[in-house]
Length: 239
Image 1: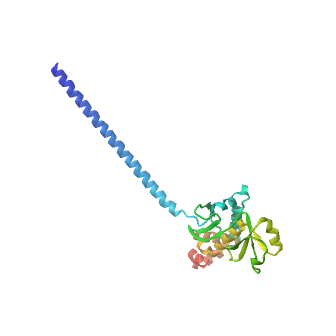
Image 2: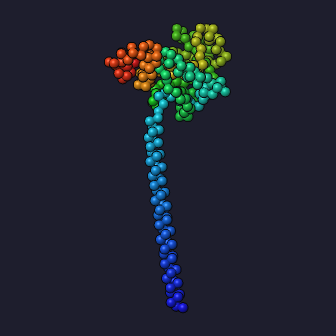
Image 3: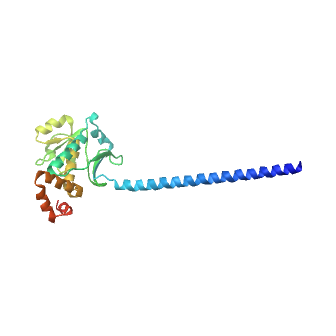
């Protein structure tokens, strides 16, 4: 009996040790798999983070929270439509097909402020009042306009101006002043910035597209003959 008990105890200890070893091995394998999976996720996240840094819009507009209604057609906002028209007009005037212009709100800006960015860098900014109109005249100081308003400088051309209420719009126009909406002020400012920075916006791909379109308009052989001594980079520098 004693021998059987001793043998049973030894077997029990052996089984306990074996199961413990197997459990520890399984736990170690599980931990190793989790470590490898975490490493892959971190590597993927790191790659995605780096790639996101390279994904910078050529042109971007940021607006303070009081200007958000200008982006919403349901609230009478027409800024997005003006930007679409601006892109079409730039293609006609400058021969440049602008990339999509992304517009977003930025709570760090003052409520009535907007800023224009090129490749992620803020270039110019301005302040507008969505509920008012901007009255200005190149040849007559706004001080001669007998209407109450907020004195300002028109951001695109630096003209003295006055932000007036909607009820005074007709009076200002009859007095010879140019009166425009807040959306028009922003879109005009964007247009002037694009004109000044066209050479930075124009890419080699854009130049190639212009050349390809030219081949459709005139003789392809004629264009190819001209391009023998000129590179795409040379044309981009000139433009």
